[in-house]
Image (cartoon, rainbow, N blue to C red; front, side, top):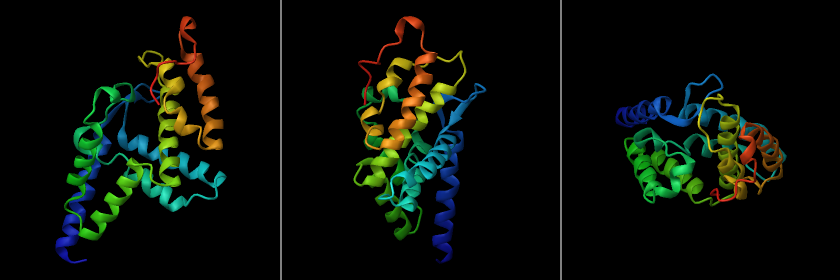
Length: 199
């Protein structure tokens, strides 16, 4: 890499740091808003410990997908799952934001990052589908362990991403434990099955 390539790469890495300040709707167990970077970190951890249960998956590829999946949010922020159906431009905006973020990188790196992003976004491989499943799982875990004073639609969480998480037995098994915790957080008059929530 020459100096121009290195400078461009440094710009991408610096700009990606905005994920540390990109807040999500979930809160940590102590009540602080979580960042997109924190979500991505635990997503990587979950993927790393669960992927060996599915030896057909390429773990290195899984982790690469985990790292890039939310990079576009460094520019326009996160859209909570409960609001995504009200934002038809979200997917195209996030891809544009991703392309803007990686634009300064050398062409080969930029192309590789964009290929990973598209693979994830389109659920084009088993690895991408696995990352989508654990992405949902991480969100559900965070909501279930958040503070009591936060407004979370726990009924929505009971069906959120279920189609994705059910594809992988280890993810589905862990999700069933999280669902128990989710139901325990619900008001007693609303402990149904979350009918009406989005996949």
